[in-house]
Amino acid sequence: MAQLELKNIHKSFGVVDVIKGVSLEVRSGEFMVFVGPSGCGKSTLLRLIAGLEDITSGELKFDGQVVNALAPSKRGIAMVFQSYALYPHMTVYENMAFGMQLARGSKEQIKARVEQAAELLQITPYLARLPKQLSGGQRQRVAIGRAIVRDPKVFLFDEPLSNLDAALRVATRLEIAKLHHAMNNVTMIYVTHDQVEAMTLADRICVLRDGMVEQVGTPLELYERPDSMFVAGFIGSPKMNFLYGAHAAEFQAETVGIRSEHIEITDREGAWKGKVVHAENLGSDSYVYVDIGAPEPITVREDGTSTYHTGDPISIAPVAGKVHRFDKAGKPIQS
Image (cartoon, rainbow, N blue to C red):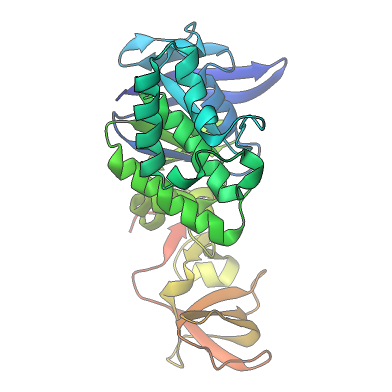
């Protein structure tokens, strides 16, 4: 288990500044998730922690020790990539054992570690197979197993589910969550652009924007108390509805944000009138998209199956106390 401290970390590629002064503490045994849009610097930050890229300025500490110049092999980290990075000519067992063999582990020790990791990830039946004989989800579990065998202090995951289809993403996400609970003495840092993965896996989330930290907090803290319009719009699925002009002026704000589950269909006085643009029935719930004259349709979540159709007149209103108010700078207005 390791505690990581990043102090004013900068990374430049030539004249291009990619990481612009990131300061962050990752607690021992924590599952920290880096999220943000493409190009925000989250994978670069992970590679700086791994030692795969040199830090331009600032300090990176593992358990209080500065590791800026420490080789990746000496940092006690294991990294899982989105591309699996398995050796195609080696069996699953050989892939998982390879790192320990390089470290001169005994055959008995290697065998015990590989079998333990395989049992944890439910891949014991596949130990004699080659990677080409496995599904994408099985290959990713092998890549995770190879990391477990090394007994690292820190796990680094770089978008490990991005190559999987929707069903496999959910199943493998559950495996990673179970792994975190089973190995609660290991610090884990996970990079994704998928905020659903972040919300379901993280102890805390670090939202990155343009090479800087926008907000750090638990999933619910970011969801319920975003520090900016950027975080409010990035965290949550579907994304938060934003309204401007007269709709925002009702609440003495430059912009208001309302989540889809906090809008009700009602005919009460003061409700916003509009027309249904589209309705999506997903089984357990539905999404109704409503044109009220705002720049974008408003998304309204309904429990169960919706009875609305395109063109239907409709009146909607925000639930009292659930409106997020923002000023001109996109910062929350305190009530």
